Image (cartoon, rainbow, N blue to C red):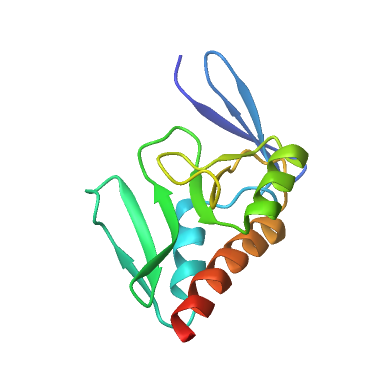
Length: 137
């Protein structure tokens, strides 16, 4: 069966053979939104050091966000204070230990609609602030 989209009360329903997704644009950040948000930060640059499937956003030559381009769900890694990292993992099912990263300092965020875009931006801001404050020292 092919994918189809239907509009219902300003939400979109995406129907696939195995799932029905309710699309609420206030909850989901798309890859391009994450990219634009990161590049809007002072001194931020975009790189592809691991090949074409992972965007890495850096400030001062240090990574603050890694964005996977080859996953079914949008997901990204952000740096995090170790105590806060543990707290977020306990309180949000979309936050897991950083994939292929130092799990003490990095979280993977799965953009599944369980938290608002504003919360995702806060986590990105926290990562950027951690990395950019280290380069100022």
